Length: 376
Image (cartoon, rainbow, N blue to C red; front, side, top):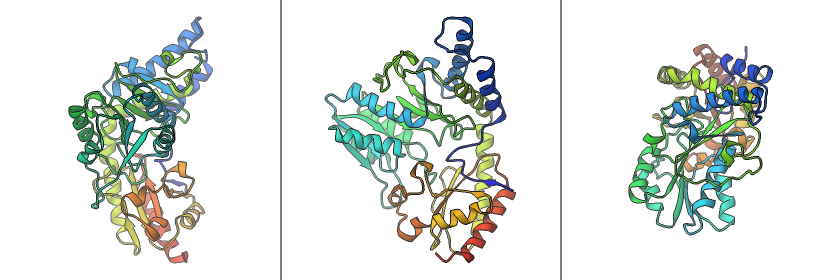
C-alpha cells in the first residue's frame, strides 16, 4: 500500500482538475490569442479560471495574471516591483525563512545594488510584526514574507505586518508567497493588506506548470518575460490552457470546503502527534499553532536521507524539507533554532484532507522500525 505524505511538495490532481485539463487539450485546444472561434473558446476557459481564482481571494479577475508556477510568480513580484519602484528606494525586506524562489531572487537583486534585509525569528522561535516594520524605512520599496513556511508549517504574521507597514509607509509594496496557505487558510487580498500574492496550482490538487500572481489595481510591476503581450503584457507567452483549466477546477472544488478540510487535517495532525509521542527519539519541530498540513519532526540521530530511503522501500513517501532543495538543508530549520543532529534528522510529513489515519498508522509503524534498525 502506497502512503503518500509529501503533499507540500505536490498534491495529486483531483478528478475535476484532470477532467478540465483533458477537455482543454481535446475540445478547447485553440490558442486563446487567436481571433477565431476555437481561440475564443480557449480564452473563455482561461477567463473562467481567472474569475474563480480572483473570487477565491476577494479580488477582481483583472488582477490575476497567470504564470508557469509560483517560482515565476515570486520572481515577477520581486523583480517586477523592484524595477518599478526601486530607482530611489533601494531596500527590500524579506523573512529569513523564505522559499528559494524568493531568497535566491533577493540575493540576485542584492548583487544588482539593492540592500536586502532578512528578518529572523526572535530567540523564542517566533516572528514579530514589529521587527519587520522596524526593518523598513523610507528607502524601502518592497517587503515580502511567506504566509505559511513550507518546511515547518509556521504561520507568519503577514496581516499584522502588512497593515502596520501600510500605516507607516502607505506607498510601500507588500508581497506574500501564499503557496502553502492558499486553499488551506483564508487568503483574502484586502484582509492581508497585500499588493502582490503568489499562488500555485499543483499544491491545491491542480496540475504542475501553472501559477498566478495577484497584482492590486494601481500597483506597477514591470514584466520579466516579454514577447507577444499575453496577460496584458505582464507575462508574455501562450497561456497553458489545460493547466489553467485544472487550476480553476481545483479552486472551484476546494473553495466551499476550506474550513471543513482544515478541521479534518487538524484532527489528523493531532492523531499523528499522539502516535509519535509513543516513539522514543522523535522530536516535533513544527509549532503547535502552525498549519496542520505540514508537520516537521526529527528522529534524532538517524540521518534524514537514510530514513527517507528506508521509508521509500516500504512505499511511504515523505521528505526532509523543500522539494526544491533536493535533500539539501536550506537553513530554514536553523532559523527556527533547530540545528546539528536534530536538523540532520528532520522529516517533513505533509497531509491533505484525503490522508487517512490508517496511512498515518503505517507511517508511524515504519518510522519506529526504522529508528530501531538504522544505526545513524
